[in-house]
Length: 203
Image (cartoon, rainbow, N blue to C red; front, side, top):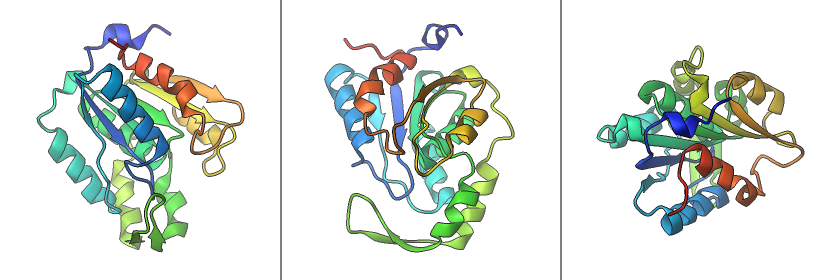
């Protein structure tokens, strides 16, 4: 597979989407933000706190990135954020990096309907049954340009099935990790591949 970074415009705007019950305070988002601040402060970085409602989350995202240059933006998404990132990439036509991406969150999140807590705070929120239905229209029938995607997938993911993830992105670039976990706790080791795929070499 040829180097995608060579065939795309430079990234000037980067969106990071966290997973279910997560936040911009996750280790991966903070690590990526720190790398961007140190090495590529010229790139516009946005990592929003996503609301529980998928419809509201996507509306907020598309409202904010409406003024972004489609050819010069990219998105990174983790878990549920990877599912959202795929929806963004399909609609905008940008590159996407997916970190243990959810493939069928409407199925997987049914068991989480009710009150729950965020990982990085004491904040409680209610995941409503209708939120599951809001996920369904976001599922793309197929990936229009698989070469736009790079997925980092851990066989040791205790939440999502690595076989389902690799099947979804089988035509895309995949870094398949032996072992590992859902959080990709050794993300620091894989960050160079993430920014490399996006063509974001350090100054």
